[in-house]
Amino acid sequence: MAVISERSVANMRAVKKTLQEDGRGSDELPVNWYVALREAQHRDPERKELDYEDFEWQQAKVWADRMAKALSTKLAHSPTIAAKALVLHLGAKAADVAKEMLVEAGDPLGEKITEEMMADLPF
Image (cartoon, rainbow, N blue to C red; front, side, top):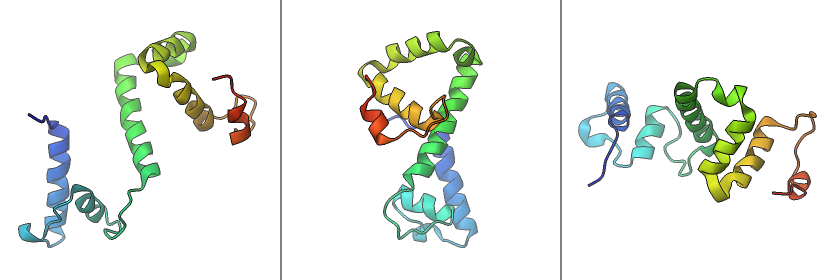
């Protein structure tokens, strides 16, 4: 049995409502969820690929909000413990996440992180 969150169902209902308010009848609604979402957000429905960068930032914001709610400022005030907790949680993927964090946060010395620099990292 598949479990769908109430939030997912609420999002789908909101997209359906938006499309119906734009004059679509129930029989004219897209069958594909991503096409419906793009149309509701006035994106080009013919574009088959998703805007992953936009999606990643939206998803990151959701995760950050959840982390803030659960952990408050503990991660920021205890970076060593935060790093150890993330390593325990991420396991073998911790190094990949660390590399991505360097790219996103930038180098503390203000240098732009390049692919060549990434290759020189010990992890």
